[in-house]
Structures are given as C-alpha cells and as structure tokens.
Length: 179
Image (cartoon, rainbow, N blue to C red; front, side, top):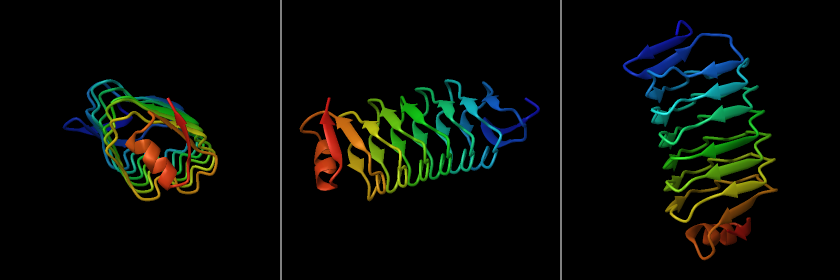
C-alpha cells in the first residue's frame, strides 16, 4: 500500500514502479490522473467495489496492454485510457457511461465488449483507434455521441438487429453485424 495514495476511498496517486499493479481493496474510485503517465505499467487488476475510473486515470500509460475492469465500475471518465498505445482489448462489464475521448488514440485496441448496462457513449470515446475491428454493444444503449468511432476504418459494430446501434452504424457508414 506504500505505492498508493488513497484519500476517503479515492486513489489519488500511484507512486510505484511495478509492471503489474493490483488496485487495493480499499479503493472505491480511481481518481483524476491517478496513474497517468506511469509508462512502466503493463497490467492492472481493479477489484470489485471500484465504481468509477476518473478523468485521465490511466492516460499515457504507454505500455498498458491489459486491464481487468469489474462489473462494479459504472463510469469510465474523460480521457481515462487516452494514449494507451498497447492496450489491445477490453471488456466493460457493468459500465453505464463512457465519457468523451475515454479511449482516444489507443492505436492497438482491436476489440471492445460492452455488457448490458451501457446507456451512453459520449463524443469521440473511441476516436483514433485505428486498429479497432470489433465492438460488441447491447441493445439498451440510448445515446452514441458525435464521431465516437472517428478514424476507426476497420470497425464492425456488433449489436442486435433493428436497434438504435444499428441505425447509428448505418447513419455513420460503419460496418454492422447483427448478433
């Protein structure tokens, strides 16, 4: 715990140098820029009980390739994973909201699976994810913002047929596959 600064359940700063980081049990929220710029981090395990990943929390963690996000996380903050150049896939279990630019410029991100709770994906959330090939979205999403998948030329969105997501894909000239 010496590597973590935690205030009232909020992880405010990681000061360690480990490649594999396990967020402590006492953390309920990963705060703004808490691990931003920690270039040595390769994997992160977030335990059940964390409800939010804050603004810029993992921004510019250039070597981050894997993160386990539990069902308890409901919100991914603005630029939370922006510029995580080696992140390849991510599963977002209980996430209800993905804020703007959350995964911007994640060059190697190929696959994203979003489970049933998602309601809103904000503007530019996956902008500049050139390698993004597959995004699985459930039927209950209510809003997909402006240019969420801008500059994602390989993308196919997988979602239920006749859904809001299918309409969004058609209107934005994005490949669609019914699931």
